[in-house]
Amino acid sequence: MHKNGQPHQDGPAYFPVVAILSLGSLAVMKFSPHLRFGEYNGMTTNSSTAVNDTSENAESTEKKTGLCSDQHDVYVLLMPCSLLIFKDEAYSDYLHGIKDSNVHQLDKICWCYYC
Image 1 (cartoon, rainbow, N blue to C red):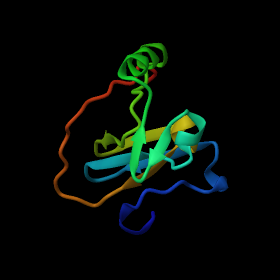
Image 2: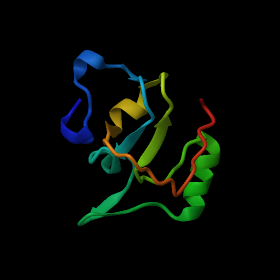
Image 3: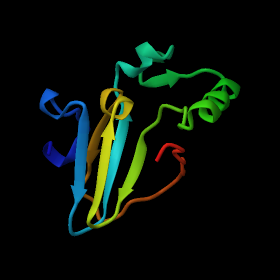
């Protein structure tokens, strides 16, 4: 694991599938859009702000793909003794990390229809 759970992308030894095992306690996996993600999806960046398509297009994309279309950080709760397996776009388009913290706050829920 990287220092302090910093977002990272695993090396080629783990491609194309990554498995994360949560053992004795809860953990929260953070997925952050990879910096190059905007280049592939028509986003432009100005400083640290990303500008996406209109919300109407974003809603349409979400309905078609079953994925949240906003390019913000996504958090996945891992219960004790759980296994998270991810691949494809989750591997290539997002960095991931687990930050050691006693308190986590949820502010949005995004359902993934392909689970």
